[in-house]
Length: 182
Image (cartoon, rainbow, N blue to C red; front, side, top):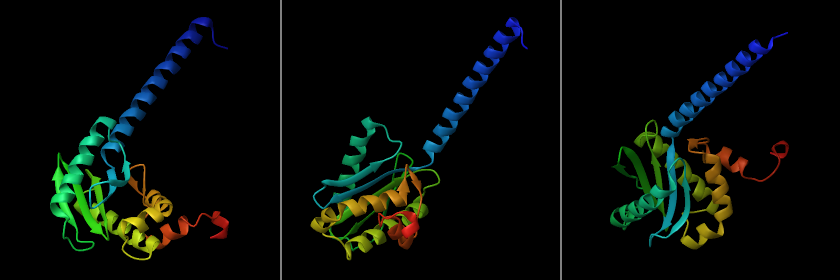
């Protein structure tokens, strides 16, 4: 048995160790947050946002990113071919964007998500959208299939990390059936 003096030292030691563990976890989370897909945005040709997913971007910066991307798309994507990739860099962040049907797609990442990794992400997203819609989507078809597109997007990118790149696997995952039935 511990004496009273030893118990208080023990409690103080446990408390200190808990603080150290919490500090390490928060530092590790900060390092992970630096290496992620920052955003995936879908807009129409007029610049209206259809879907947006931000990961690790503070709320006060999101408006800046929205307006920047809409301006970037308005300047470069008018008259672009379907699935022609464009690359931009802004504040040490990489941006890959393209047009598919009537929908503009933007993927933003940094660190390990450089141009090549983002090209793979956007290829997976565009091929999955074409698969869900049956063809390159018009804005109306995109909004009609909104639920399945959101599910697909969540299967491809989850909390800023690339999860799946195989469109057949994504299709199986969004069937909305228990795993035993798949």
